[in-house]
Figure (tube, chains in turn brown, red):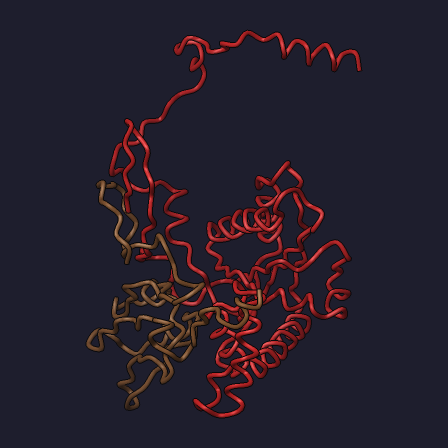
Length: 116
Length: 268
């Protein structure tokens, strides 16, 4: 217990090596600045920026916290934003058994599992 | 007593092989064949288009729909059919505002004590808050995952809300005297409720931060949480802004170990 208290691998939130939040991909040409994604983001990591009348979405300055949920993608009418990888942490929070991103598959081709 | 024993011994004397010939066994049960690659059916599509909704219209949810989804919840499976839950439906703006205020203040307190990212590397405050975070982390690692930590920060900073100004909130109280692992039954009953809500075009979001209400004896009393119960989860409910349920999204695949024909395959 004491050992765990003192030496446990503890991922430091603002260390990008310990807490890897993969930023969402934003297609600025498609983004029409409608703001819906900034409203639905569960981690409040998105904001609008730019000149009046031509605002586009971007990640906030300390953009860690994206939970790769694709809520932004689901609500975007322009398909301008997308998460492509699950977040990953070190230590106790390291994940196992999570693979690549995929849309729902109606037909399943036997593919060997590979860790993302 | 006698009848029960007779029944029991009758069961014991049942022949080992109870299998009926196939045509007899299936005489009133039709098997529906579903072709590989067939379109998603109504139920599947409902699950695939469900999103967590955090932005609601002001329009209140009709009362009868709330009752209707709770009825669907009533028929959820639970361990030993023990149904270890009660519901609290809150549609009073003042009460919701009070709950929001309380949870935000708790997040601020927590964040003040453990958010080391607020201070520069090497500063005394950073060292102190990081040690506190490390301690909490060792004691309760699941709750101290970096994701809830960022959410706590965002709520404390006013960038994020707890109940998202939903017009209706359903709080699920868990009976700690339930069978097995009551928290699982809460997840199942909640899933029934949110899928019913989704089918009416309503948006929902699970609110784990509602557990903070357990810390306050005043809030426990106001919501009628008696000793053996606890606030387990809450479900925000309302009409969603935008059209979040139109498209399918991508999620991570999961490892599947598949045993068949004397072989083991690891599929993804």
